Image 1 (cartoon, one colour):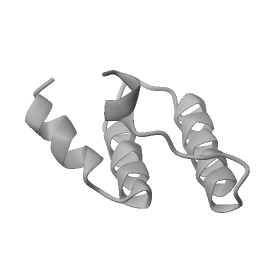
Image 2 (spheres, helix red, strand yellow; image 1 turned 180 degrees about the vertical axis):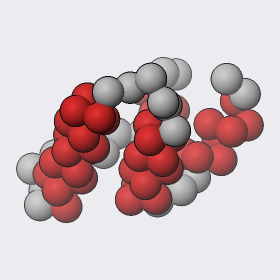
Image 3 (cartoon, rainbow, N blue to C red; image 1 turned 30 degrees about the vertical axis):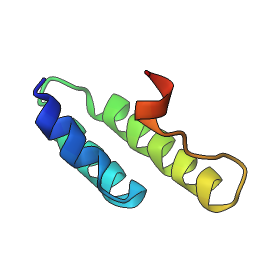
Image 4 (cartoon, rainbow, N blue to C red; image 1 turned 180 degrees about the horizontal axis):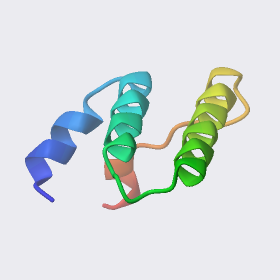
Length: 65
């Protein structure tokens, strides 16, 4: 993967990154619909947990320094 693409994606607000991830997942034809829907539900649950303060976001760059 090109680092420039990842760097640009990480500059996006969390909600936009989730939307991008959903679009990328949706573009994978070989994935079964049930699996895709499960991943989308997981992402939505995690977003809700962050909004409600039950989880916090971690900076990807800080994790892998």
